[in-house]
Amino acid sequence: MPLFEHLGRYIVTIKGMFARPENQKMYWKEFMHQCVEIGVGSLPIVLVISVFLGAVMTVQTAYQLVTNLIPRSTIAVIVRDSMLLELSPTVICIVLAGVVGSKIASELGNMRISEQIDALEIMGINTKTYLILPKVAAALLTVPMLISLSIIVSLWGGRFVGDLTGIIDTNTFDRGLLEGFKPFNVTVAMTKAFTFAYLITSISAYFGYNVKGGALEIGRSSTLAVVVSCILILLADYILTLLMLKPA
Image (tube, rainbow, N blue to C red; front, side):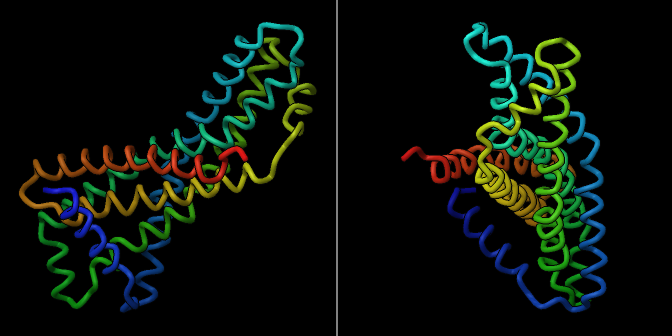
């Protein structure tokens, strides 16, 4: 399917999800369910990856700082800014694109193939609003929380490994975390988190909702959703970094 046809159908799908809910309680229940699925369900993998990201970043930064002219607290500064500006938002969201995105695409694709979506439409339910909007809204709420937790856990992991290996003691690491801290970096991280969360859920929902064919097409749609989400996350990462962190 041509790129512009995909783009047009994506816009129509997203536009269709902004409608007045038929039953607010039903939509609220679905929203909370998606918060649990996306947020709590992704928590273990986010924590594991974050700990090792911080640990590896600490060891790698210490390896590159081979001169005694650079204070050890610089290790914590580099780890802090790397996790805030790039590693936690981008790496975690790419992982979530595979975990959450494929699940959303396969779930909606299965509903489409088994005609469950058609049955809901016959019942007078706006399926775009009921099936897509709670997922997007839940991701916009939970993914920034996951990214915030990832940043904290990764810094703890780097601090722990630095002290365990003798690379940098905890007092020096803590001092480095406060050196030259720019609150605007948190704004950058959260902007990326919100943007990536929207891309993951909306793109995955689009491919799942519009799947055609049989069971084989569900797998292809899930794979395509993950690939496209990852590519657009990297593209959005570049654009946001260029716009928000461009040197004067």
